[in-house]
Image 1 (tube, rainbow, N blue to C red):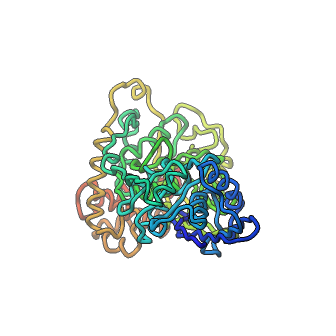
Image 2: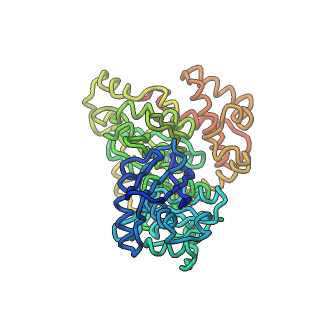
Image 3: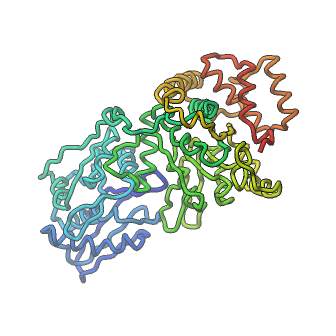
Length: 511
């Protein structure tokens, strides 16, 4: 008898439809899996056989041919265990039911018939909804992440017996749904507050501008001045995530099997801080095998990627960031696969002004020669620095600032209110075309970043004296547009342009 079961696989962060076709007929006992299965799928016949027998069913005798369609796509992982087992039971007429044609089945089987969680359940649930199916049957451990998808029944099962009973209609299972509103209403406990950082008022101003417009930020200063502390507090002043942003970010974490501690939905902006020894693959994604893994630049999607000690990173890894910073996407092309991961990030980088770190410290003498400083700064290419909107100096704190135990400046909640207001102005202005000022293209810049006569003259003088590139010119206009939004004005004034120019310290060759 022939049986057909719906299933799903992962390509990038998307679920793709698969069909598990099982044919059982008379002959010598044999099981064959075709359709480009990898080693894990081929080994599934041993797991499936033991799970079927230990669940009280009879393993089908005779010739069993399992086809994984479409046959031109490489299948990998253990998520096909459950559909293969259900297909074998249906082909041998041990179970039957119309639900076989209405539900997607995914899950890894243990030898005792229990079902273990898998990676990528969220995009698989989205794929089931897009295919017009009624729902998806998956491991109970994946129910919370898949339950955020509206319009599809999420059926959690713990054992093969439960799954078979549901397919037959003899075992009723209530569809699981995650309370998305309750997840968004959960408060972030113990989040670091911006007012905990002593002094550095101008750097906090730059953080506010970066959060309000989605601008990349570079902090330059001696060791121990608070660069890392400031970067860690940036997610706390970013605007709240929308449901669409949370869903897309959660899809990435689901594919990477990084949803821990029962997380159902990533509702807080990610903050990723890889070590400076990270490789190009770990930063951008890829890896060996048939399923590429999202890198740090994708794991930080809709959040913050913090690169401390920027010149110490692998040069190739830094140069690979150019395209993600420009397009918000990272394209990975290998011999065995070709995928695209989203990577719309807010990049925050920190570095010392010289190898010893004390070139800009008034209390300590720099031990570096001019040649050493130049070689240190030359590790960063001009095209990469051009893609960073804000360059800000982080000086050493005075003794008075260190011993002052009062809160320093506004709290994160107060800054977030101003940032949210600026973002709301941007969303209303661009009507969904762009999410923030940092993403404006050249046409949008000409339309929304117009300058008056004296303001344009000020920017022209800066270009003539500082030698701004065309990309730096656009960055200045985008930052000036954000400064005007923070001030709740439509027109870009001279002081907005002047402050935006002041944030291009590396173009002014101060370091």
